[in-house]
Length: 388
Image 1: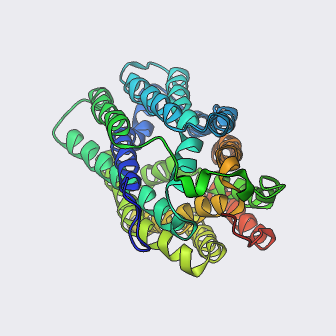
Image 2: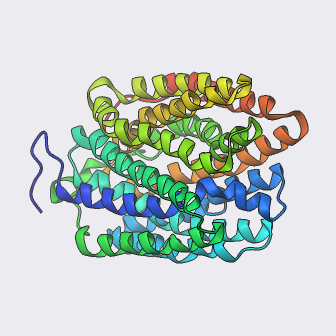
């Protein structure tokens, strides 16, 4: 593998990005259509919250375990192959579900794969680059991930417009998912950079404990970010046609894909905490807009705002996790980060779904905006020191 220059990331970063791109084509071919399938099988808003939440909460401990074990074994790739493979095989089973509970079961199984792969993948990305390139590397990975989401959403819209039956669209998700696994096996290396991973001396005492204040930011931020399916349902409530939902979803991912890499790179220079503060403030304002909007036309800038928030925060968050922990504890650090996010993303949608059902959409989105504000208030307590 060629060493990166100061301005060039190694090829393995782009290979991992390609895996994410293909995986998200498969995933987002499905996600914007889940509210339609849920309505078809007689689900409620509480079921929608469960469907959103179970996608993360059911596998939170698995994320922690896979990160910890990848540290002990010093092997990231087997966990990633297993994770991407499980999701690729289980995701198309949405084509045969018949109730909200079987939908939830398939969604949980799909996310088992995410639990296996997320922490080892993020740790491997940090292993592959220098400390000053972390924001750029995570930005590239997130940009390609969201490019896949954009392509998946556009493909879903095109297939529906061509008259392809809803469940057949879900079945087609098998193809890009398996292609992503093939790219991972062939083009992503196993070994980390020797300069970054050769010695445990780079891991300061209490490195993982230094992450804890950041987790107090990540938890409410994840609650606020768990509104994706609710945003789509809000669009339906305001009269957006079902065939337009994937296009709204695509608009969100246009912004995420276009801006994740440059904003991730900016976090290397401008500072992770500043980028997070900007993203959290924007998120709170956008969620208030979702709560108060009364005309469907305003949903387009609101969805674009969700995309800009994600572009501001995703690379910066992951870069900060890597900054705060040493190389030999990075897998467990990312496992802890993803586990905390998962628990919050499990409880958040269930609570938001219950609020929506009892008090309406406005109350649910105002509550999500409050969670984003809480995360912003906790941000000053996050440490500044960079490790390794």
